[in-house]
Image 1 (cartoon, rainbow, N blue to C red):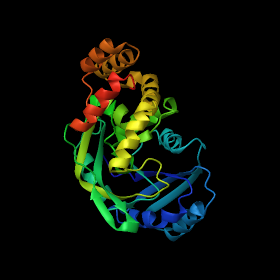
Image 2 (spheres, rainbow, N blue to C red):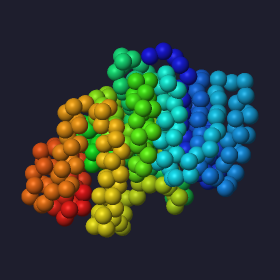
Image 3 (cartoon, rainbow, N blue to C red):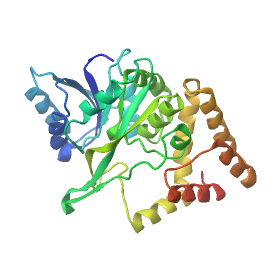
Length: 311
C-alpha cells in the first residue's frame, strides 16, 4: 500500500467548545505524519482561529493542516465536498468529527489492518466507539456487530460510523468518483457504507473502540438511548422521516449505480420497485432483496415500517 501520508477529513461548524481536545488526540493516533483537511461550514465561533493556532504549533513536524470553506449545506454535504476534493491518487483516508476524542493508536491499527489488503482491492475499516456523556461521566461501548456487514444491511442501516471510518486508497478513489454525484444524501457515512459494500469492498470491523463519542445537545445525529429515544425514533418513522432519508440515500446510489457490483445493482433496483408497490408486492420484493438489520429489534421495526408503507 505504501507509506503515503494519511489524510484525515474533518467537517467543522461552530465546534470551538470541543475542538481542542479532539485535535490533541489526533497526535496520539500512532502515526508520525498525517494531513488534516478541514472544511469550515460557516462557523461563527473561534473554531477556525483555534485550528490556525494548532497548525502553527505543528510547524516543522510531520503533521499538516489545510482549512477550506464549506458549501453551507449541512454536515453531509460538507463531507462530500471533502471527499470529492481528494487527490486523484490518494493514500489512506480517515474521517473525523470535530468533538470526539480519539483513543491512542487508532490510525496505526487501521493502517496495519488495511496494509494486509492488496492495493487493487477496495477496503475500509470501521470500529466500535464509546458513547460518552462528560457531564455525567458515563461511558458505554456501542454494540458489537451481530451479523456480517454487507450491502443488504447497508441499504437499511448504517453500522459504519463515520468518525471511525478509514479507507484504503482503492476505496478512497471510489469515494472520490462518487462524491460529486451524491449531493443531497442524508448522511455521508451511511452513503460510504452503502457505496463501498455495494462495490465489493472488504468491510473490516474492528472490535476495539476507536474513540470517545461525545454526547451533547449539538450532535448532528448522536446516539440517544432509552425509552424516550426509542419512542422518538418510532414517531419519526410514522411521520415518514426514515422513508425520506432512505429516499435521499437511494437517489444518490442510483446516480452511482455503475460503481456497484451487478448483484448489488439488482438488490438496489428491487428495493426501488418494492417502495413503489402495494402491500403484498412490497413485502415480497423486500424479502427477495434479502435486506436485514443487525438485531431482531431493528428487523422488527423495519418490517413494521414496511407494512405501514413507511420505508
